[in-house]
Image (tube, rainbow, N blue to C red; front, top):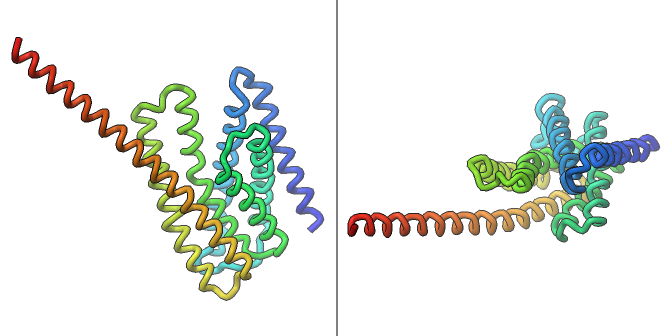
Length: 242
């Protein structure tokens, strides 16, 4: 257990060092640009490791919740814990995120700490990390496209659609199924089950925000299409009159 705090400190130091290097070598961009590069890298790394854990190393989280943590599961959680602590501190310092995202980071940190301290349910934590981070590259891509002035394009549309579809499928559909398996299994502890419920509720809070975004964007696109249609009709009428 004494090696876990050292591992977390080393990972936290690694993420901070990476951020500092990006800031020093990418001075033309702002602090948030470089922080999101770190976030993107963590998302890709976390998805690759946790995907290997779930699909190759095992056990399968839907059938074996509450099992003992494996060395690879511990490594994945320590890496992500170091990142979440870094990003939480960054968000608080620069005041860039709202209360929902801060609650998400707080719950992620506490959930990983709990799983590491209990020495079990690592497979569930890794599954949650996988489901949470698999949409992260798309989320960062949306932000980078906005900064580069390329969001209002086909690429931006594709990124938005993929993000919404993937979020609904992984966080709501698959997440709901995994929560059900967690709750009916006798192995996981009650506090782990409560944590799973809390994370799933938080996913629905994000889902409401995404639903509002999707509605606003669809309404905006409809109004734009309607105005263009009316303008084309007026121009066609004027052309016939002439």
